[in-house]
Image (cartoon, rainbow, N blue to C red; front, top):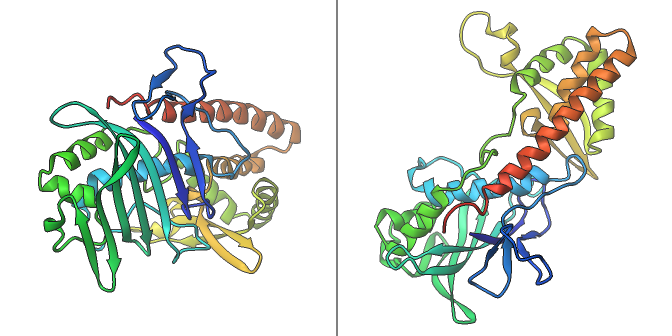
Length: 334
């Protein structure tokens, strides 16, 4: 059971942001809440996130998928694989921080244990990682690793296994491979995590529509410029969209729409960065696709009506998928 989490310098969140799933004493006593064995509070099973387009709603949830993947599967990463944790593109070399509090049943005794886990990553290497467990009212250390000089200094659980520990691997995943029961319990819990968001890629139910839209815009500069204007109103950091051919295979791949990508150019003060349209917010990517249909309708009201119908469906699907992502969050058995 996840009770709270916090991120800093993760995707669109440059500053520290936190989500607390505990509820106050005035909340009704019903099946919507779970007892929190770490305190006298309760925890919500379902929580909704709402906000303006490109405000980071999806990214706030995506960190949980990234963290679950890193904790449970990073031992299988190749030496040159990147972690699923991505920093803000204007602070790419600075420390990315994740803090999460959760409850997991002990592998042997089934007793619930309350944990605090902290992870710091910079330039795709783990710089610090720490796990603490609640014993009475305070949290005490289980393990801690720090990158000092050109090697890790580890103390606590499993420190004798620290030799050859890779920079892109979670200490929990590493210890689980050595069958340390406490690490195995936590890794098994995060292996159960399910979400409609992926840790390394976008949530893109309209992928083919987006690819088709890229082909439409790159062959119609006037329509493309109009699209950029609308995207800028929707997502004020986007100043331009450029198209680049990506590697393809087979004869004639140069002409295939699937071998082109659109990149949104973001500008903030004197800084500039670009992001694939597939990694933009779902609202921005959806609008990009919808604006491409303008070329097939000469009557503006037809376009407006079509956009309104699709937007209503998109909004419903988007809110439902957000609820579903959070529904699974605390439906996993401890």
